[in-house]
Amino acid sequence: MKAQTGIGQGANTESGNRIFVYEVEGLRQNSVTDQMAHPIRRSGSVFITVPYNRMNQEMKRITRMGGKIVSIKPLEEAASASANGNQGKTEPKSKQMTQAKAKKTDIPVNIYRPKNPYIGKCLSNEELVAEGGAGTVRHLTFDISGGDLRYLEGQSIGIVPPGTDDNGKPHKLRLYSIASTRHGDNLDDNTVSLCVRQLEYKHPETGETVYGVCSTFLCNLEQDADVAITGPVGKEMLLPDDEDATIIMMATGTGIAPFRAFLWRMFKEKHEDYKFKGLAWLVFGIPYTANILYKEELEKLQEEFPDNFRLTYAISREQKNPEGGKMYLQDRIKENADEMWELVQKSNTHTYICGLKGMEGGIDEGMSAAAGKFDVDWSQYQKQLKKQHRWHVETY
Image 1 (cartoon, rainbow, N blue to C red):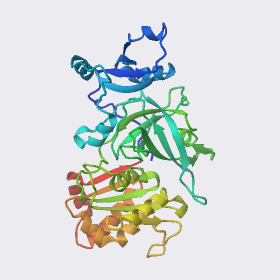
Image 2 (image 1 turned 45 degrees about the vertical axis):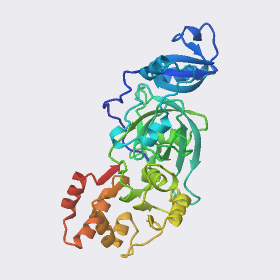
Image 3 (image 1 turned 60 degrees about the vertical axis):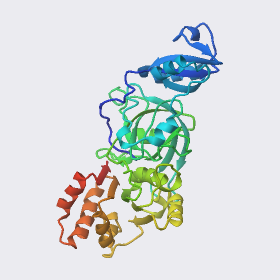
């Protein structure tokens, strides 16, 4: 999903000014590499100290020299382990542990920035739109095993497309909602996935077809190709820790991305400290059946978890609303007004909206109709939900 086109320059993570120790195996030693960072051999490994702002460059150099990074450890932890006489491997706290235990109080933000992005590799690029559907939408998975990129469900990463704009300046990054859980599609903490639609529109003056720079770059990306990644960013769309919560998700098109991550965490993964027992309800707006992204996977979850997952489609070009018009997401809200309103009033219900910005008006229309049946002013009630951090919106 494409979000904003820029990124804030907020505070960096606590790693900002720290020094790290890389444990590397198989590094080819020669007069050049031996002079860089003065590596010390121990137990068949090379240990290299690296400042945070050079981590990405050093990873590239190590790979170029045939080395494999076994562990990355903050300098203070490495020194402590050495002082204790540990002559074997000094494993840092793994990214897997960090990911698994991450809470909202430990939200990773801006680990990688535009001036020093993480260079990942494309592992796969798969079409999600079935035959007969409109446009092209790709599910892309990137390898992030060589760095410190961590993220939570509901966050976004930035992609910096190669090349320059019409003014000869490097392209600005574009933000995309992450479509995988913190553990990645392979459950090994080494990947991140996106759901990207190729932007295509008619130039208002010339009438020629124009394709989005970054979306076209991503949709045409080949396996093993490099991709510059920044982030992660975002705190608005994070899931609550409450295992009994009611989660209402409203999506159009590639707005499904964060909700795929939510549902995979709730139902597909097994966690020691999170076992979802509440209700998840996805209302998904698309133009054609062929445009239902992740259709088989969603419907399999509905079949396996009928008491905890509800799936409602609004297929605008194929279904009709009660008035005979196209079936949009707001029509589904009106159709389920009584139940929707009852759920929204629960103190542990969170509502998430993701997709094209124009969908907000339709949702407000639908919720106004739902609340109006009970003589409640929806605009005022929505303000209360936002104050309680139970109404989450990410549109673009």
